[in-house]
Amino acid sequence: FMKAGVVKASDVITSQPSPFDDPVWDFWKQQKCRITRNNLDVPPESDVVILATKPQQIGPVLKEMDAGLEKSKLRTRFIVSVAAGIPM
Image 1: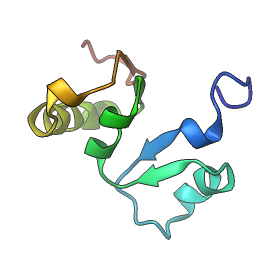
Image 2: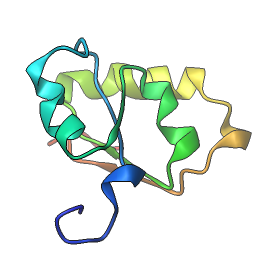
Image 3: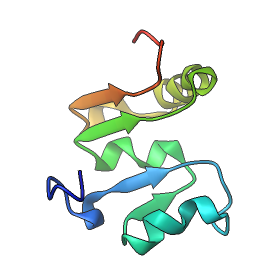
């Protein structure tokens, strides 16, 4: 999406549980994207949320988001899942 010019890197927020010094963050830092380790930081700031997790992680992530978000304050209009084999 960034390479195609659909979104600016500064408009991207990525979340994952890895420590910030983990090399997995390097790409996002180089692109100047916002990063967080808290999944609940993303939806209030986002029009679109892309859930890209391993299939065994999608259930816990969705439960965390459902329990922890105040839905009246969400900007999110679309949730896209790329977790193969998981119905939503």
